[in-house]
Every structure is written in structure tokens, then in C-alpha cells.
Image: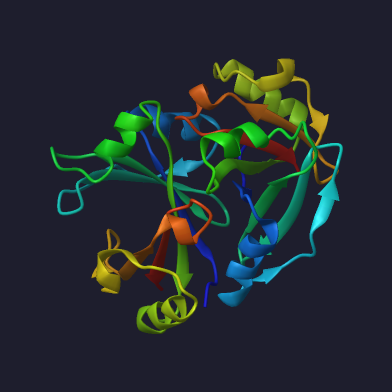
Length: 133
Length: 133
């Protein structure tokens, strides 16, 4: 069911500074993109084999604001795995006792694909996203 | 300087349970390997494009014991990036104001390659490892 690591998401207090850090070390970054419906501004750091998604809060109700209150310097927020079929993935996860957030209903994620998040308690303390790709 | 995400390391309280979770979702895992000189027992979860390294404390002075005291359920411990040349990477990092742990002296890491860790304060709160590969 899980194939590839689509991205590693890192919440940061200063998106421009974070992107610059990676560029200075020779990794290409995308232009910042506002995703107001998700409450984040993002930049992708494009490694040869996968991506880091840098997330900065956007707007007053950003889902990552509380995370940055706990960890003001930033930190790894979640890992996203590609799955072939989000409905099949939800079925397999549920059969394996993995609790899904949002009632297990897939939503259209920040990148236009169906996604669902699993409870960190069922993944060794790590917030995990499944993305149909 | 940074090329690929070599692995994402996740500290876990129960290595067998964590490995089983990923196997049940269709990802191959390696046999557990004791690395007493590093104070960890590890399993790699082998995705198509990169790896997760599951880390369980081994012995009383494990470097991840304190991490698991703070986060008993586990959590993401560090990200490891491949670099071509560890000495050149140390030079570039230092020129960019990135503080390196252990006085910036490379050591032979858990996988037999020279490694050095950067200070999380200089990477948006994320502990980062550079591995020569």
C-alpha cells in the first residue's frame, strides 16, 4: 500500500530563511505558494529522490500555528506517503487498526490529490499523511 | 552539496511493533541490527525512493533514551542527507554559519560511512545528519 515517501513536511517560523538555507546548500526550491484554504504558505525543497515541504502559517487559523507555539524554532510536522488508491488505503489502514483523522474521509490536499491523515498514536508518534498519486 | 534524503530516522519504544506496522502496509523491512557502539537497535523500512530508519534504544547510555523520555510514543529524530564528500560538506556548512555537533569532526556512522550532525537551531528545529555516500 505504501510506495514512496512523497514529502517530509517541516513547519518553520520563517519560510524565506528556511528556503534560503537549503538553496545555499545546493538544493533547488520552488517559489512560495499561498494555500489560504489550508492555512499555510509552502515551498518545496527538491531533492533527487523526494521533497521537503516547508510550511509557514498563513492566516489566524493555520493548522500549524499551535505546532510552532510548542516548537518556536520549527520542526518536522509530518511524513507523506504515496498510495495508489486512497479508498483502498483507508480500508487497509482501518483493517490494521490505524485510526484516521477527520472521520477517515479523504479530502483534497494541498497539492490537488485526495489525502487522509493517520493518528500519530498509531504510527510511533509520527503524524502520517497518505496521498493518492 | 545536499543530494538525496538518505533516510528519515524515527525513534520508537518498540522496534518489532513499529517494523510490523510498516510491513502490514506493504513495505519491506530489514532484520533488526544491534549497533552497541551507537547505543541503538535499528530496522530500515525500504520505500522505493528512500528509507525510514527505526531506532530503539540499546543499552543504558543510548543517545535516544532522553528523546523517548520526552516523547514516550516515539517521534521523528533526524533527517539524513547524502553528500559526496564529508570534508567539503563540513566546509560549506561552516561557511554558511551552520554549527556542527561534536566539534565538526566527522565520525564513522551507524552504516559505516563518515557522518556529521548539524545543530537543529541552524535547520529550523530539525536535527540533520550529513552522510558521505
